[in-house]
Length: 80
Image 1 (cartoon, rainbow, N blue to C red):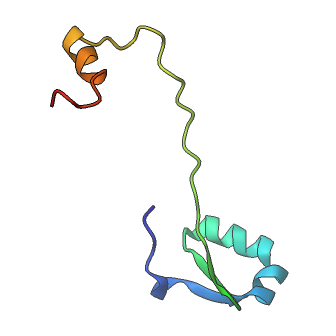
Image 2 (cartoon, helix red, strand yellow; image 1 turned 90 degrees about the vertical axis):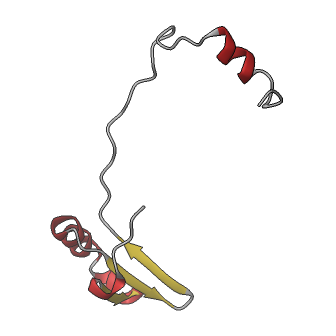
């Protein structure tokens, strides 16, 4: 995950973030700029996240391996 430099992020307290969470979340998604929430024990970063598309598993038999590749895979690296 690539983190944005914190110098460009708004820093909020926990109280501010709790009171305005809905609007903060919408703003983060719209502007693509993260927010740092400062807590007594550390900080939390709220950043936009794009959910990746579902990739279905490969069909059975879609990949074929040579006899040498299978033999090497079954040796736990002893023949390397």
